[in-house]
Length: 143
Image (tube, rainbow, N blue to C red):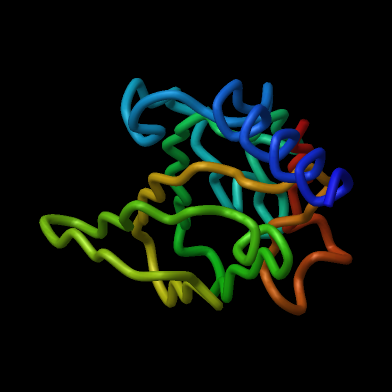
């Protein structure tokens, strides 16, 4: 009986006091605008404008993916897309609200803006499928 009481009291204290990792307030406000990630900044159409990003879990970010139109880019971010809370994607005058992303395909010049909150620390890649070995890749580190 004492063990159950101890566990119950400990749980109540934890819930009442909280955890340092818990966020306060609405996480998707006070966006930090990241430098655009432009695919195809060199003559070959492979290089990206920003080779790396450093983010923090629980903070809201805005990242605009831009295609120069020099190639078709099927943009993937595998695990990164799985470990963000996606608020919206903006393409032109269209705002898309979805639970997640698999791929953003850009067949010509254009841009898509992601608004999101990273939820899991780690090291990730965002890349153009099939072109990453040629330089169409950026790293994302989430602390």
